[in-house]
Image (cartoon, rainbow, N blue to C red):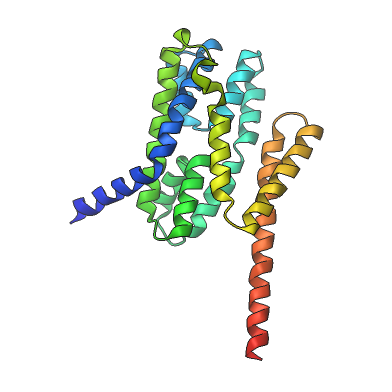
Length: 241
């Protein structure tokens, strides 16, 4: 019985995440190619993808390494860019309140934009156990690490612009955004993030605009949800009166 349940969890996780894994392949190849061109070995690429696991952060880090930036500058920039992962992990933890901290910590290790979007979408649509979320997120992690290493191995034979792999990340983020905009609150939150991020990009040096946009979008979404909840409670109380 236990084996059947565990198999079902793996199947559910794989069905939910396979499109992301397919999308990660050209994206990971692109990163591996760029990392190899920047002078990173296959082992360097493996450890970076395994320990950092953040597409945008890794692309930025490699571009800075290629430009000769200091180790401290690369570390600080990557930390700032990936700070949004704290928000995403905290958001998912709310859905799984009361679950084991160890399992929640394991899930947090594999949370990036894509796995957060998939898990959030599944949680909104119905039953989505923590085990399935961990499986889906881990499979995405494995696909990313494997594809980046392959890109590093064959990087010398592949041009970064081949097959459009230099556009893969942008295309994936656009698709994820479109599928998340399924209500007025989410549309307004997305617009707030876009406006705040654009203004920050124009006035603040570096890549802090990513964090600014994420915080602005999350804050506006939280505010709108609270306002909608308060309005609903007020209308309900008025009807009862």
